Image 1 (cartoon, rainbow, N blue to C red):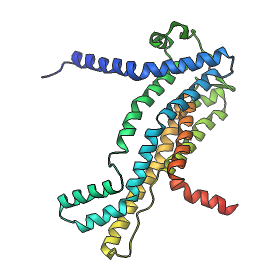
Image 2: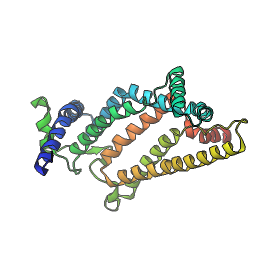
Image 3: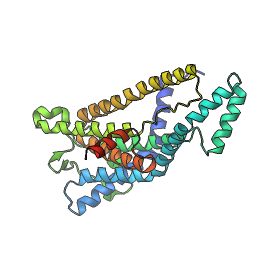
Image 4: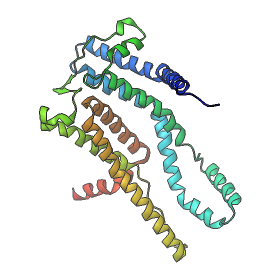
Length: 290
């Protein structure tokens, strides 16, 4: 059955409506509720604190899923030497290898897909959070009429204009406009990129272990695999901060506030669950110099 462009448009609109109902509307109502509460208390920078508070709240709600994802990734990395041994033992017998791998996973309480489900659960939540912030920020294409139409209670309705100031920063302006507002705006994407680098570096797995029992050929294969994986991981560690830093440079400061809050909490959680990871060498070096 062939779909016309009109049918496809109807289906897409239905999906958007469902997403707005389940994810976007609750998130935007929470953001506005926090903002109105802080504004009623005459707290300066209410919009900025609202973004920070909502990001913390949602990050805390998905904390168990994030921990599960980090633990699953760490366990899979720890099992890598055992999986290599099984591949060597059952070379040429895919069925026996699959059975042995499943037994190994069961023995160590590992679900190979354990890190995927938590990540999938978080994606729509953080898309909704991003959409909520981009819609409420002045100068970021904010659509207050759209927001007001999604609010559960008329008492929450927003005024025609929001105060975007947050300790001297206008959350609606972009660091790319530093020529107009001052070069210090460039600190926003720089800090964002640095925080992203730290978190990305911490997620790196431990190097592949080599054993004396490895034959010269196997040792070379593992070294080649480790070098190849290391190159890919290193590229991502440096590419991700550059990409996120560019986004922070191009988008309103309010989004950088959200992203940096999210990243700082991610660094804290990563440390509590699996330590410094790929940042261990740098931390040790700093301690040694002291």
